[in-house]
Every structure is written in structure tokens, then in C-alpha cells.
Length: 196
Image 1 (cartoon, rainbow, N blue to C red):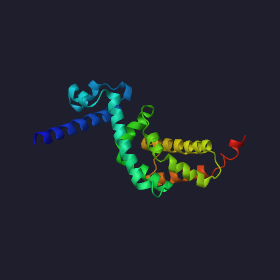
Image 2 (cartoon, rainbow, N blue to C red):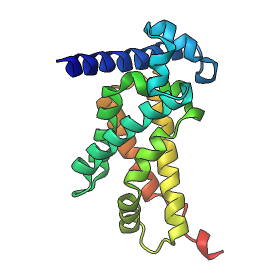
Image 3 (cartoon, helix red, strand yellow):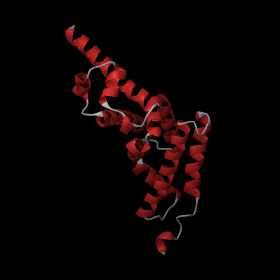
């Protein structure tokens, strides 16, 4: 019973700390937030904070890592066996919506995170394989460039969607992203570059 109570208390403290960080990030950037700010907002003492995290950056990184691992596992389960652009895009949009507080935090602090890049790297090999199917004869370097064009555009569009700069519905966003990816795959910008 005592352990159960401690576990429950620990979970509550961790959630309060996380929520405090999200709330503070609505007012200021990550570098401006202190442990004191978080403890005050979460109504926990500094000892409780330091029991779980080394500093504010460590808190941010641990939240990011846990969500990245969860997202990557879902992508592996849902998309890797029958890889398709539509499934990947639909999964990313669903997961973005499910983790809205976190993704908004990322969009406001893009230099502090590798979230999108880590997720995209999860399915990079499958995506490059698909690039080779669409554009036979590309060198490995040009395939990497094609992947980066796609990944960069997708991340930028997602960040603008999260911050409401783009006001499309999830279904419209899915159509836009799928069309964007397919248009990059159909373009001829890669052709002949490796030969010069």
C-alpha cells in the first residue's frame, strides 16, 4: 500500500512538473525557464525536481525522448511491414494531434529539439528504398538529398500547422503532405546532377 501511494505521488509530481514546463513555455522560451520557475508552477520542492531531472534541459530531453520512443514504436508497428506514404503521413498527423501540448512546445522552440528528425530517421531506410523505386538510377548521395528535401518540407509544414499558421483540417493536411512528397518524387531536379 505504501509503495502504491508513493508511486501515485511520484506520477503526480512528474505530471505536474511536465505540465508546468508546457505552461511556462507559453510565456517564454526554454533557455529562460529556471528550476525555480518550474517548482513554483508545479507546486513541488526543488528536491522533488532534482530527484528526477538534472536541470530544465534534462527535463525537456527526457520528455522528448519518451515521446520519440513511443512515436517510433507506433510507426514501426503500423508502417514498416507495408510501407506507404499515406500510412506514414496519417500516423504522424495522428500522433501530432495526440501530443498537441508537446508538439506546440517544439514548434515554439525548434532549435532545442531533434524530435521530428529523430522520428523521420526511424523510417529513412524504407523511404530511401521507396525513392529508388520511384527514381531508379539515383546514387546514394542523391537519394539522401531527395530524402532531405522531403523531410525538410514535411517538418516545416507540420511546424506551421501546429502553430496554426496553416489552418487546414487534419484530412486536408494529409492530402497536402502526400501530394508534396509525391511531387518531390516525380520531379526531375535530381536527373543528371550526379553526372556533372
